[in-house]
Image 1 (cartoon, rainbow, N blue to C red):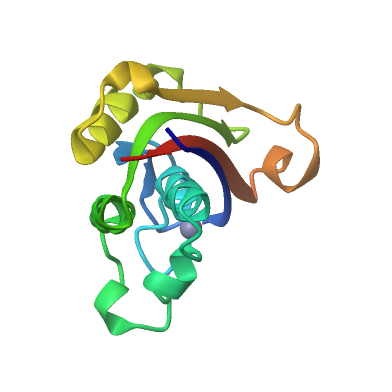
Image 2: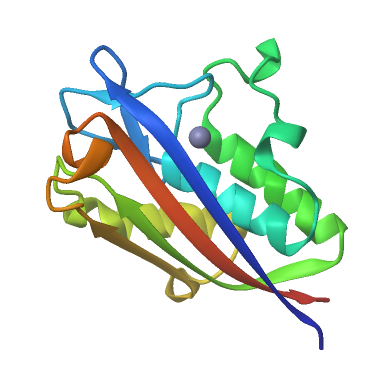
Length: 159
Ligand SMILES: [Zn+2]
């Protein structure tokens, strides 16, 4: 059995007039993430961790933000397409761990729903997907509520 680790990080600005999608779940908030797609920071970090583990480049390579095809696209579709790429390359997911950094709003109540959503897309058990959330204690751009960050780490095994 061959094991491979992958890591991903993603950033988006928070602005008024946009919806806030995190982990495939719409979060009630007065700001949303700015981006070409729906700007789901957690799903993008997970996509990059999967591609990284399989040494398949990054999300920008496969789904360029200059392409009209991906304008305002639901990032759940990008995650599905990414999982198909890593399966085609001969990998399956053992587990995912991730952290979302944002100051406001509190998102703990959404985490179970995010894990279920991601599990459904990736066809893996909910228990193999960990999502944590932290503030930055009001420091930096996250603390000033200017942006949001997500980190993801994945363990893959070759099938
Ligand atoms: Zn992104």
